[in-house]
Amino acid sequence: MNDQTPRKNALPPTKASGNHLYTKLQVHFGGDVQDIVLKSEKDPTCNELGQVLQEVFRVPLDEQLVYFRGQRLHHHNSSAGNRPLSRYGIFSGNTITLVGKRGLL
Image (cartoon, rainbow, N blue to C red; front, side):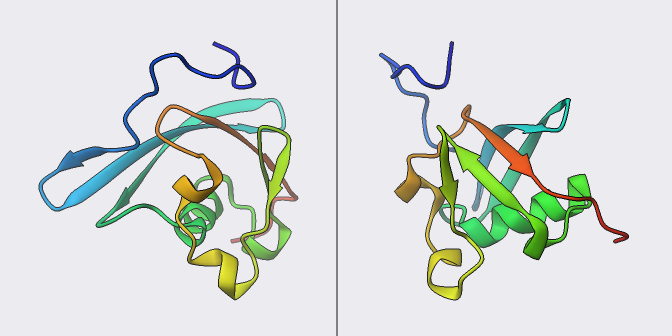
């Protein structure tokens, strides 16, 4: 299903397991497509997404440009970093695009 078309039956935002929530996202980076899982105690935030992207793709936080449905997430400033991904409509099963230059992490 294309990420641009609305889903008739929306996926649940996260899967609960014990005290943790798991959110699975598909990430496009360069020519690479990879699934990542965000593990958090409550709704995952933009900061948590940035940290996982830094660990998995070795793109420093200040070099990351994250797009969802053609819109850029402004997750670098302090006020937006603590916002839950659900505020942007990002839930488990969605696809995001990462643009950035890999660093030496």
